[in-house]
Image (cartoon, rainbow over all chains, first blue to last red):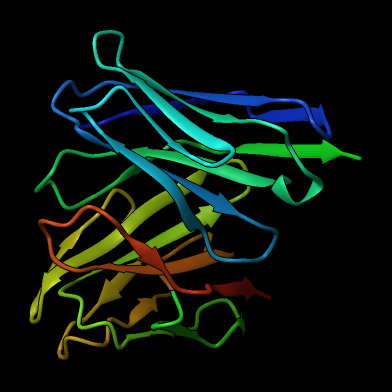
Length: 112
Length: 113
């Protein structure tokens, strides 16, 4: 089955800095990679996703890159703000596989 | 997200008791999922259902049971066979088994006393 590893487990940055979270996956058949943000005590919310037919996707201050050859994908947050502080999860699946495999999460702390 | 509800928000249970967590959605989604979240462990899949009257075990199904008698409802029962049930439980749904994006409910925090 799929295995997803996520690093780092915690990340502290100053407001305005960039943050990068990296995930690797094991199943070369995986072709869908979402990122979720979870604030303390709340539900995970989808913030961006990417499919294997593209290498990069951006949405304002958030971007995701995918390297299929190396089987890793990354979340990039620019100009971080205190409200970006949360736990971020990556996940992977192949279309039609119907189940997501999640990484263990990264706690991002943005200090003013 | 607002179309998926879970109840109760907090639940306390004595050891040896079964307890049922509710998950309802009004999104007309075919597929529904149950995850367990522990600190530092990410989200682990307990059970999932792709269609009414059908469900499959996930990675950590032991000590749990589910039913899917209606499209909008997917209750999870935590049985006394689950040795460490204290956790945050999340329900999710997606349009169909062929649609990858999952949307989560607000979660139920279960504590065993």
